[in-house]
Length: 388
Ligand SMILES: [Zn+2]
Image (cartoon, rainbow, N blue to C red; front, top):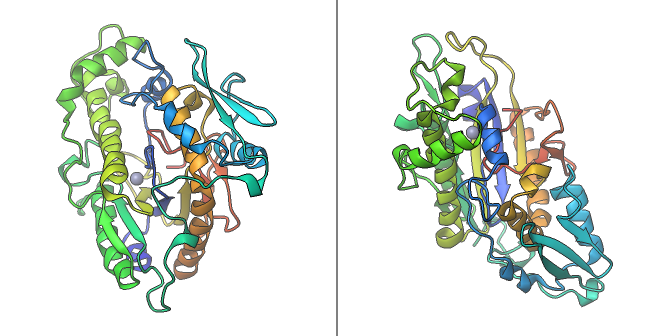
């Protein structure tokens, strides 16, 4: 899979996101906009502090995780995996026998998570996917027997590729569209995984959106967001695509709410409520910088990395829904499965391709984890990937 792609896309970083049953939003996203950063940091719903198009958290769900984790394990996952960039002191307060997690600052409501006293006293972790040790014994030639894998080709491609800014063209050659490439990879990968015994499903298997919404459905919301972010009279349309102020138009904002926020949330719903896989592979082929946007050029820089969920930013932790999803994911112990899996996939891919690991230029939004050198924790939710 990688080899054929490698020769075709010599300019690409290959990114695979490995996720066990994700409750949140699983995608690697590049965000070119200063404004979207502002939107992420500012909720438009006033009563609850919920992220854009997010759902009100159901904190009662966490009751099922009482006494399923020890103090030390919880603290390790908070400090080394999920909250590596710190957070406001009132959000999570870890005590000897319990953690107090802020549900709502305005209402001053907290969720109390009671720890198991020790490993022996730990109750079983409830989850909808199966950890590796619970999978049926496999035969040598079918090592993935019974494993349910969902392939999620990143982006949309097709007629949406330009809108989602995952398109470029060198001279008169065929335009390169990430969404088409990722789908192609998924279709090459699926039969190979099936051959090894896996049950494979697609989160997307066409170049049409999963969400039923379209940009025009978000015009009102876009206007509200822009006004809230200091653009009192936002323009309706983008007049010139190279205009840096295009991000302040209702058109641009509604498009991004469509292809990023709405589409991604819809895919998460499909994974969580329909496909129920043990593992989700999100496929991305990120272009390196291509120089002059009017005359892009190819580069020989090639690399590989894998992302697992973690490394939430302090401002992301502020949102009630993001904080809730993070805690739920932490308690599901997805990381314990994602990390060894990502490390072994990375090493196998590195062996086949000879690609070096990608190095993020900063550690502001990622944290290197594992032992292979290829794996990073990142909260990929609707956020830019500064490494592209
Ligand atoms: Zn991508």
